[in-house]
Structures are given as structure tokens and as C-alpha cells.
Amino acid sequence: LVLGVEAAEGTDGLLRRCAGLRREGPGGVLVKAAKPGQEHRVDRPTIGPQTVILAAAAGLQGIAGEAGMTIVVDRAEVVRAADLAGLFVVGIAVS
Image (cartoon, rainbow, N blue to C red; front, top):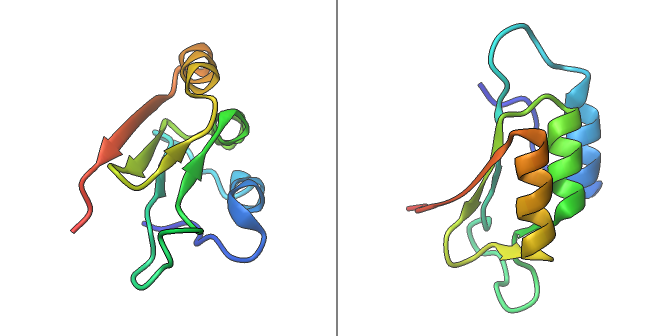
């Protein structure tokens, strides 16, 4: 089940929009991956501390980023925020 797709509002807007769609049961996962044909030199999937905070507020269980493609801004703070919120952050292979 896909609750939302990121548009011009960016990841923060997506997470705020999807927070109100939460249902009973386990939370979902935010997946950050490059779109087919996306310009990788200047536009890559990115995760930062704010992403973790908003994912937790939206009731998600974790964040998965495309391995080798996703930029993690302030890695130590992302790990700290994820640990504090009880979220996982993992890299995934996308084919």
C-alpha cells in the first residue's frame, strides 16, 4: 500500500501530508530512491535529521534509502534521532 508520493512539496511536505492518513496497526516505511532518469549529479535522494523527526511524527517505523545513491546529511544526528524515536534507517538495493 502506497500512502503518498513525493511531489514539489518535498519529503517534509509528504510526511506532513501522510501523517493524517495513519491507520491502526504497524507503521509504514519511508522509501527514498532515485526516480528513473533522475539527474544524479545534482538531485539525489536525501535523508537528514528533520526527515527522521517527521517520519516518527507520522507514525512510521523506519526509513529505507537507496544504497549508494541516498545522501545522509549529519549522519550522527540522523542515527541519534532514529535511536531516540525507535526508527530503523537502512540502505536497500533498488533494481
